[in-house]
Image (cartoon, rainbow, N blue to C red; front, side, top):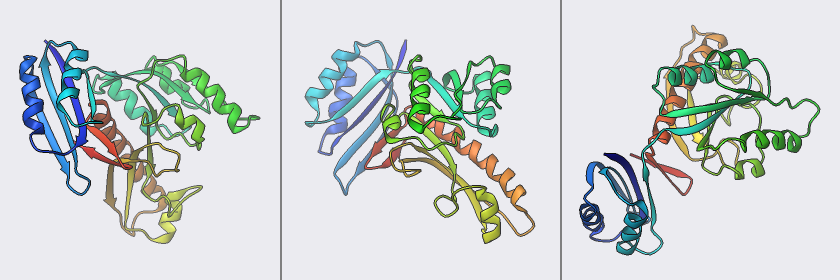
Length: 277
């Protein structure tokens, strides 16, 4: 018996859940789990359902379209592992955490490759038998470097790209190739502590909490729709290196949580915000 995920967002009106459930029943599908949310301010309805059974997806979607308000967004697909490429620079904590989860089959994704602008993490990737592509940016303009990276990425059929501490700013043209398909992790100090060594800057400022944010990438630097966040408290006994170690743990945990949500299709993006079930 197949497993399906149904996601709907549309204008809110009376009877939506009844109509959707009626279509599901007519196609002899079973609702395993169902979540709904109404954004009352904008009169928007969001629903995610996990279904089981056997169905012609095109027919099922067409019937739903006929029953729902105009301009409804309906996504229905068979549940499966996502195919992803990881991008990294020199820091290993996020990349290593994802590789370990993949190796232990705790990641709902297949890692197709790692792409980096340095060669430092090749050994780590190859320990897990993951293809590694180093595209150095030395001597290249940003456009030239991105063109080489895009050429490599185009050789894979990708559902998502994960920026596992990839420390180069990507152009709007590059991001446009993977709209809402790129996930990034950064320390929550941005934009207060930007540039080199943000943890040292935060230490010198005397901050009391540190954290991390995972988000979809868009054309505005680190301002894409937020997927997951977390913080931890620190104290005066910690130097900046202690803060950095603690912050890296938060970063990898937040990224891991975000990837679970993305790969399980639990997220709706609406007006640069996320609705998460």
